Image (cartoon, rainbow over all chains, first blue to last red; front, side, top):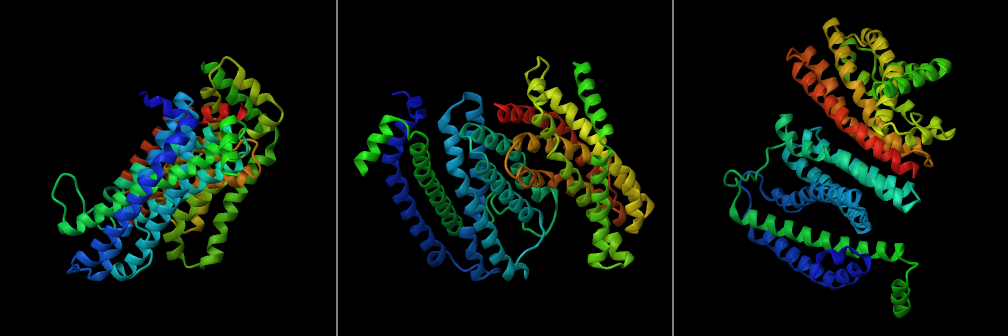
Length: 244
Length: 222
């Protein structure tokens, strides 16, 4: 079977219809398991007491906010290079979820910052670049909504995503570049993580749940976009008539 | 190739020279925004010196944004832009020439005004000197990245506000390094590191922005 057949919106529509329940249910199960580990299994931190538990939401959300942006840039680049319609639709389907995760990361960060630093907000490098990431998402979504022509909107959004992608590495390295309040990354691939194993497991389970949720939601959204754009075609009419 | 770049440059400069009011507005905007800050935060010289570098950099950023929405719009309106894009010369050079012209017309005058505002903000002379260098290195970034935004929003409803929304986040590194260099001099740590990073960012934008803006221009004109 050739994987490229799924680059056609018709085939992808049917494939994603079959995949969505799997991703949805595994996301629900992992979220429940992850929250259980986070709140009942993981021990209280000796320095940060109970308030540290917010990282189980905060860290996965911050990871997803950056990762989704890179995925959008990837789909945008593929779309511009190979002129595939589905890539642009994927980029559009991912953007709202990315913006929401960025917002959650900022919001939970503020909740964590109040008891830890004594301030809801500090103008530290990481917080600031996460805020800029939110601005980038908002800018891309605003550009899409301002352009009525679908083809122009797709390409313009992809170009803006690509030039903004330069910003995402700056976010990641900002901790090293500007040496400020925010604690350094606790997880380092080069050495053992500086947190208890069960905390790490809880965080990873939540991160995987966030991934599965993102995939499920993006697939639902991309199906809507496919139906909207292919509304002139026979197969969409057939589906709509069957469902009506 | 060089002749095409020079021709674009000469054309834009001539057009700007014939409509003198246009570029003066941006300069007065710069002066006014900077002058509003002492009125808002109070006239204490120490505080003004403290916020001065950042305020001048933000004002310069906004002043250059003000004129960016018209970078391609006038030529698009009378149809000459399409002819220039259709010509056998590379669109990248067209964009580069227009960004360069924008920098010469709108940003170089900012460099001339900035020392006066620096004195108003009670900045010491060595800080004003570094402010000049940082503006010299940093304002090309504003014109180059701005050309991407101008090309993307060409002919859209409310294009000016949208342009601001798209481009301001991309300006942040320039703002941080530019104002940081002046702050560094005033706090005694020196501004060299920030100026080097600013220069690197300028070279990076010079290498990337014209290509993306050229692609965006073709998308917008399709």
